Length: 328
Image (cartoon, rainbow, N blue to C red; front, side, top):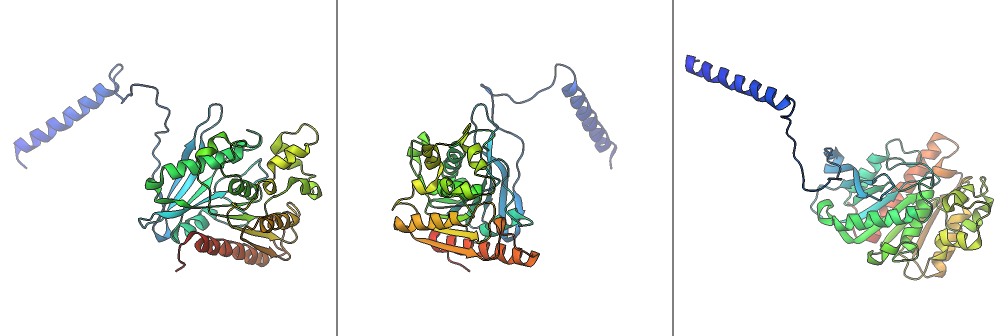
């Protein structure tokens, strides 16, 4: 290397070090600014790769309400251009707990959701306000808000906004049924007038009629927490939170799956939901799994596995059939 080249390199290094020193010096720090306060979360959120070319975006903010933490969804996007049907998953937890990445005995539920995405669906997993944060119908309003956000960002997440399904278990099953049955009900959600309805719904061991939950082991205390009743909930309050109140001929097709020995949400809840759907003329399929408790927990690990896989396979097949994605 020539002496001239060495001199140039040395000068470049010296200039770089001098610039860094000046930038770090008091009064010389430089950062980008905007013309108004910036509330967006600017922390990098790179997508996570899953098998089958699925890319997942975690903790996407779909709604910010003053006084509450930002509400988020995880979004799993297929590799193909689409547009793809959208599935919104709503977690359980008695309306008091839970998060976007768990369901029953599944050891790695994000992989389950990513597998559904790999079959041609954009999948979003919802975080909503729990009953200790906000009373009913806040959680329902959150599911509607998430659907509005996802439809508004259909191009970004490769979504067909006219083919939407919703799915959840336990408390999430209840919210799934409400979301499907209360489309554009502005009494429960003033913003829902601008919503599109969903085209399919799957509930796993969900509550359909809180009046019948008096037989539950907790004496319907979860329902009282959800509604915020100080003593006994009134008949009007019970009706307002019960999906059977809203089921009508325009309700979308349902798949109900429930364990016959559920000690948390009695299987009668799905029987009540099935009866109400059939009475309204709504297409409904129901699977009742013998010997299985809440969350599809069986008497042995193998029984739990068999029930869980039966439920998830039936769910995937139902969405393929109702939302028009051919199975491979």
